[in-house]
Structures are given as C-alpha cells and as structure tokens.
Length: 450
Image (cartoon, rainbow, N blue to C red):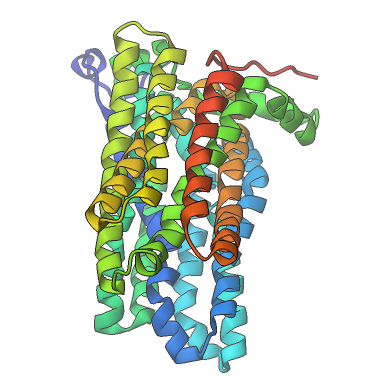
C-alpha cells in the first residue's frame, strides 16, 4: 500500500497514535448522541407546563424515538456497508442535530395539539437519523483497532452512554432553569452540527489518513484491523447485489451471531430499566424524594462507566496474555452479568443505602459485561460490518420498547417492583446462557457469495 505523500522517513518508522484521536472523536459524538436522546426527559416537565401535555401524550412522544430507531437499523446498516462510515455517519450527525434544533421551535406551531404532533414527528425523525450511530462506531473500531485493543476501544465508546448521563443531565437541567427549555435544543442542535463538520474533516480510513505512519498502519492491519474500508465497501456492493434479505438471512442463520444478538437484547433490558423505571422505583418503592432520586440515579451511571472501561481493559489484557478471543470476551461478559443478578437482592433488603449499593453493583457488572460491540467487530463478516452491527443494535433496542411495558404491567398487577426486579435479573442470566450455550467459539464469519 502506498503511504502518503509527504511523510518523512522518521514519520514512517515511528508508530503514530492517530487511532486514539479517532476513538476520542467517536466517544464525544456518542456522548452527544445519548445527551440528545435525553433532552425530552430533562425538558419534559417544563414543556408539559407550557403546552398542557398529559401523561399519555408524553408517553407516545417518548416512544416515537425508539420505534423509529429500531425500524431504521437494517436500512442504516445497508447504507453503512454501501457508502462507508465517513459519509453516512456525517449525514446521521447532521440530521439528528437538525431535528434536535427544530424541536426548539415547536411553540411556533400555534396550538398544543400541533405542538404534540410536531414534537412526535421530530422525535421519530431523530430516532431514524440516529440509527447508523452505533453500527458506524463498530465499523470504525473494526477498521482502526487491532483485535487486542478492540475490547477497550468498544468499551470506551459504549461507556459514553453513562458519561452523558453524568455530565449532560445536570447541564441541560441548568439550561432549562436559567434560560428555558428552548435553550437545551438550541445548544445541543448547534453543537451537533459543528460535530458533523468535524467528523468529515477528521475521519478517514486508516489506509487513507495522511497522519498515519506505516508502522501504525502495519500494527493495525497485522492485528486484524480492516484498514482498507473502501475495498470492503466495494466487496459489500457485490454481495449485496445478490439480495439484501439473503444477506440478512445468512447473518441470522449463523448460530454464533444469533447468540450475540439475543444476548444484546437481554443486556439492554438492564439498560432500559435504569433509563426508565429506576428513578420511579426509588420514589415509589423506596420513598425517596424526586431530588434524592435524581442524585442517587447518577451513582449507577458512574459505576456503569467505570465497569465498562474496566471490562474492555480486562478483555484486551487477556488477549495480550495469550488467551483465545473466546476466553477474552466471554470471561468479562459472563462474570459481569452474573454480578448484575444481584439486583434481585433489592427485594430482600429494607435499608436504602444497601439498595443503592446493590443497584450500583448491578450496573457495574452490566458495564463490565457490555462487550457486545467488541464481539460484533470481532465476528461480523468484513463485507457486512454495518449490517451485522445494525441487526445487533436492532435486537438490543427492541428492549427499549419491551422493557418499560413489561415492567409497567408487572408493577400494575402486583402493586410492587419485586416481579420487575426478578424480570431484570433473569435477563442477566439469559445473557450468560446465550454466551455459554449458544455462542460457543467467537470467530470471524465468512459470507457465502451468490
């Protein structure tokens, strides 16, 4: 492969670290991705007061994002494999930021009914626009990182979801208090548009990046990185010509990949419990005030962030010590999810600090075990990284639709959260079952052409 251009001999010999700058960029973008998703949860009370939304209407508006996000995963994955992460991700960031920005102006629609409709449409459009984000992250990590660094890289970008909760929730609450709810959408939208421009300027395939030395490129490629992303995209076009659904069937008929996809659904049951019902659990079942619940809810997020980074470091450390990819990925996943089962213990204690400790420990374990994106980067066919990541993300985010509804029914029928916590804990156990019984060996899948 011909190196650039203007690189000096010293630059060629020295191993650069451009891949870390790329990782920092996708971490920042993913943080904003999750912060944009949370805008309505922060501004919702102020908007309800202004427009008179009732709880049922708010529920429908909240659901708009998840429905569009799930339904758009397969088209997003196809676009990523056909056109590459650089262009598709840039369009994704630009569009979701534009839709966020437009939410600041729903008051101009005149009536409360029009505001409800406008907000629903914009949230739905934002969900569709964000659908390529995580498959694109996995595709970029597969290109830029060797196998023995991929677990840490994937864990870092995945941990942005916890970082967003810790940093942006109080920031957006302050903006709402100081300047009104409109300011949240204006600030987040404009910042996102700037990020889209930054992404286009910085992001390239490793083989095409002018600042990557020959030593870094060889290190990535020899370690299993897909450095020539444009060649893989061209190959994906050939395979896709046989029929997109045929490709989807190949991926879904592979036992290992199907186990990984199912496990992500189970892991995300824990995620969506914390994102939706956890603060309500603290208020209704544990008698905390809303302010106390808001402060307490940040503790599991911090633990999840810490566990997420630790899980990636542990997994890659096992690879560097000579363990197989199967052992290196499964040990943190299985160990972390077994730790998450301790959430059921909250049903048997009455002291608040023990409840918070168990919840934090469960989320810490979930963070350690959340290596699914690394596994997707390790195992997906090189020609269909985007599509495989999209299917994986689609399975995972179905939990965002199912979990709040199931927990709502369990709480309504029993009058307590005991059954809900058992439901969450059992899904952690199902993750362990999936990786130990269904997945078996973790290895790269080869597609059948024609």
